Amino acid sequence: MPRLSLDTPTGPLTITEEEGAITAINWCGGHHDQSPLLDAARAQIDAYFSNDLRTFDLPLRVKGSDFQRQVCAEMLKIPFGDTRTYGEIARALNTPAQPVGQACGANPIPLIIPCHRVLAANSLGGFSGGTGIETKITLLKHEGAASLLI
Image 1 (cartoon, rainbow, N blue to C red):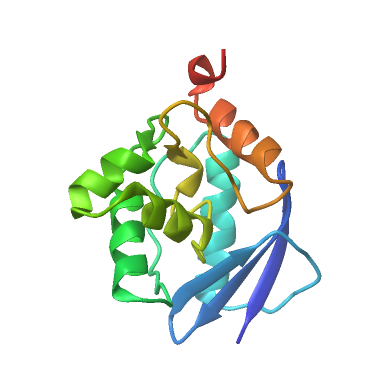
Image 2: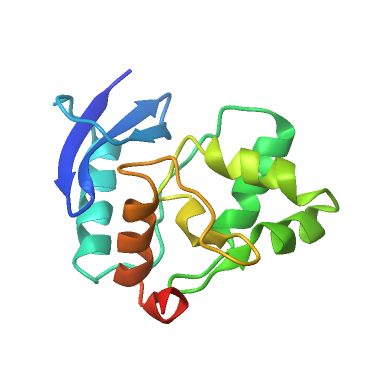
């Protein structure tokens, strides 16, 4: 599987491509494969952090259960700079909030599938990427959702 690492304001990210789709993003570095899709992903992530992109347009393939894919599809509907709660996503899927939180934590393509935009009812909730909640806060501030943090 081709992988490409790039530096971002939240630390090094590695993008994984499989059969013409992005299948994973991890906070780590050290991979230097190239492909047209990985180059496009790098360009879009760079544009996102430069405030020149609000919506990613890349082919994605979420590995996981049907429920995981449903939760990821709901997260993809959350606009740049906006947020939803685990409960709101749970209501949209007619399921309890706890499994939604678990699915958000297992999101294989964070940043592009914006799990950082999903909050608990009375707190920021968690974040499994980068340095955890600090990375979530950085991403929310970057998107102008900082009023939520005050």
